[in-house]
Length: 88
Image 1 (tube, helix red, strand yellow):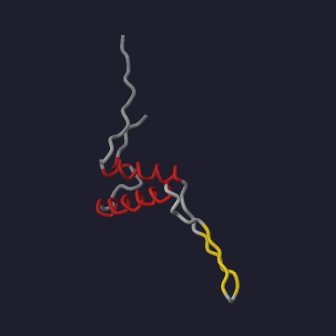
Image 2 (cartoon, helix red, strand yellow):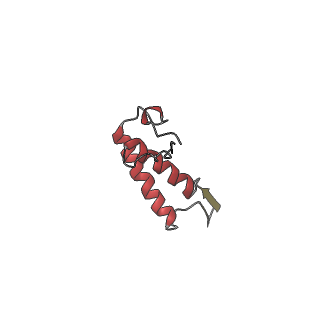
Image 3 (tube, one colour):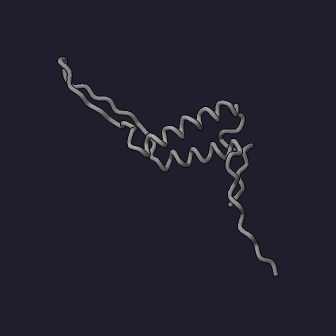
């Protein structure tokens, strides 16, 4: 597996303060989604008729992968180790 290279990432060149802020928001979304506090769709009726709204949310797996990518870009987590080769 290739080592993570922050200079080749899709996030390369972004300000680290912006990345840290986004990481914080995504981690909160992950916690909310895990706890069932994220709303995907809702409908209600009023005097003038029925209304509905639908939000698009990422799956928890997609969100976890995006969080890991941000963490790697910021140097918070290490890149995965390469396999150890055996030489004779």
